[in-house]
Length: 165
Length: 386
Image (tube, rainbow over all chains, first blue to last red; front, side, top):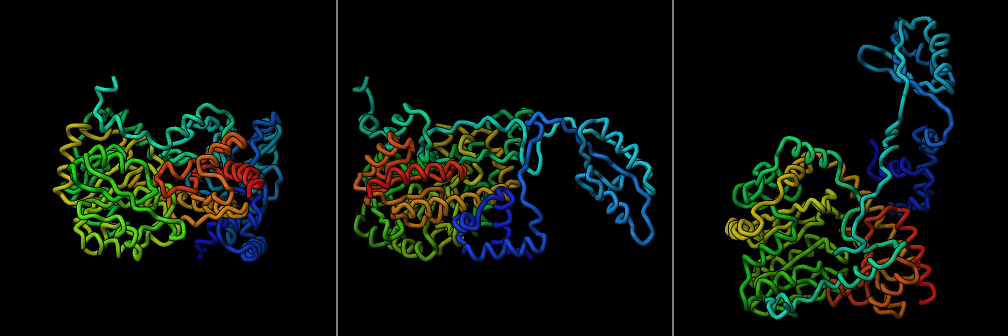
């Protein structure tokens, strides 16, 4: 069970992974050594998997297309969906693989440079795979919120009075 | 026109914060730590329920006391979080912010000749509301070396038999001081001994960063002696909705409701509906805000101490109240020069009463980036003066 202190530390890091153990110590009142040790353990245990920024590529002007692809799969005896999922996750084009409930079995997030590229990947790589029964491709048209962060429309800050009792 | 004015009103000094506000308003590029309200926006689920209520055409008056559904939610909340038991039908009044409740209570209780005891420093409206109600005010000084807690010794020094009402406001604005159960018990004994009523403004109770908040009314024998005031402004970031409440003895609530009925009629229905949603669904959002304040609080205390200012550790609200006497400046000069030289606005402690002398109030209801920038500027300002 995660302690309250640990949960707080992880949440602070999740919001801003650039915070140093010193800065975290100031904000939480925990010792720098304790925090450094804990972070090191989490890195080893793969609780902290990676440190990276959340980039809004839409603002860079860089051409990039992503699609959510639902996949219907025949589960394999002894492996269920794991075997096919592990195979899919190896493709560099596939950024996320989820096992889902409902009408489909797997949900994939695919990124490519053009729609053509994504469509070709689905037609040539994904659909012909053994055990894949059908796919449904949904191209992402606009990203409003990602990882809990609003990417659009949050720019205007409402005005507070400069001084109030 | 002035000679037509009621002399009590005409002689009422403007809020000490006003002068500073006017000064800041003339300048640009200011980082202001002068704000007494959250930087968060009201949680979406709360805003959304207000919007939905408008779409549904909920635009009417409510009963004077407020929507029964809200009063019921409030009694559940008070019972669950603070062990306070009230009857939603007769012992709760929904008001336009807790500040309306302060005014109603003073008018319902006080007559000329009565005295109100008010901790100093504290929020700006208690004294003036008492004056408007025709009563006298005695300020009870609190001190940094006592962590700005109110002590019986301090009360005894200013007490006189005309005293009828004691104001408590902990967690405290501007100091950030809290009062634990142990701190409050002697005050309760003092109140019982001298037959004092208590107006306990606990608007910041959810913003307590160590231990749990003790409601004064929850102390033995204090329920019927205490008017418990709170609201949604600070806990749920709902300052502009203007929604608060009073809980207490039915006779007092009834008297306050009578004044409320003739002056306000009822708190706005949209805000009442939103408040119901806040109590039902915004607990998690509140917890996250409190956690964030706690992180910023440590950042501020650390930063101010690092630069050589003495700063007691505030355990509530969202203010730090550093002692700036080491700079050789008065609190007024400190605030004014800091504003001109480094464009950081803080509020002189004396805006909240004479015991704020030598201190300034810095709010940490700002983003970490803003606080860090402000600390850097204050540090630069202080450096040459220590």
